[in-house]
Amino acid sequence: MKSIVFNQGIIIADVPEIPVGRDMVEITPEKVLLDGIENGIYLGLLWVKPNLILGGVGIGKVRDVGVEVDQSLIGKRVLVMPYSRSRGGIGTEIDGVLAETSVIPQDCTIPLPEDDKETSLLLPYISLTLDIMDIIKGGESLLIGQGLIGNLLMKLADTNIDSIPDDMLTVNRKEIQSKKWDYIIISSMRGWARHVAGKLVKGDGKIIIPKFLNSWPPYLPHNSILIPPRVRSDSFDVVKRLDGILKNLIGKSDNAIASVPTVKPGIIVDVRKSLGL
Image (cartoon, rainbow, N blue to C red; front, top):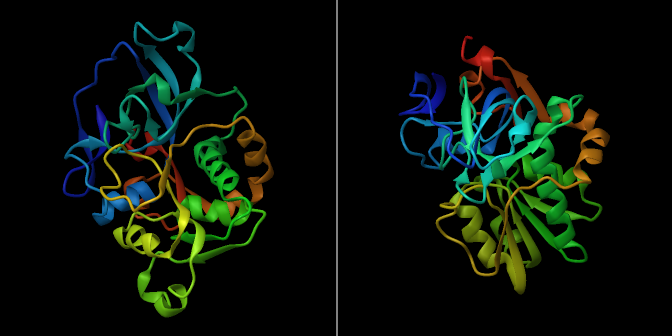
């Protein structure tokens, strides 16, 4: 089975087919969203086991299901989210969706309407951004890093949010360290972001970190909140409203390997074309 894996680099490899467990779903992936997670793997900021199939967010059609999963899902298109509460990170801790076929936990799939667009891949990120916005209402907030979550937050938030970029070399440290914030949102996989956040948050403040893996981050500053992705009912309307803006944030590609590291916060890739199928 052709797959895109990490093995001393991001490569195409033949891997054995994965059996469908009792609570698992087998899909034929169509589109996959590459973002900061794949960038982090490529840059060595996030370790994954060799020959792990990459790709955490995807859209595909269900081929088969396990014995504990509703059989009516077969033939339907689903969204695969980047985190499973039962198994961990998709494409980071367990095999992902950049493959001819993918077997993933049922608890990280969401059935999609027939007329859905590929922008549905943004639903977990928009929902996570809305969850962050609910938390930071009424407080002074600092965003560390850019990434997809950071870009969405700056476009969606109805309150002023201070920000510093992913590159610490461009930060005026004296100016930043002269203030403390109620909330600090981390949209970076770099370790310095968490280290700095612990020094910049108020005593009773909160540091907000998206949760995409069980094993990351290895270190959490005090007062941290981990928020896993989900799909909120109001995120569908936000996707439609942001359709024009998303085109500036998200690119498209027929070559997944050549798309990492991504030149935009996210790249939607065609899986079958990327695998030469």
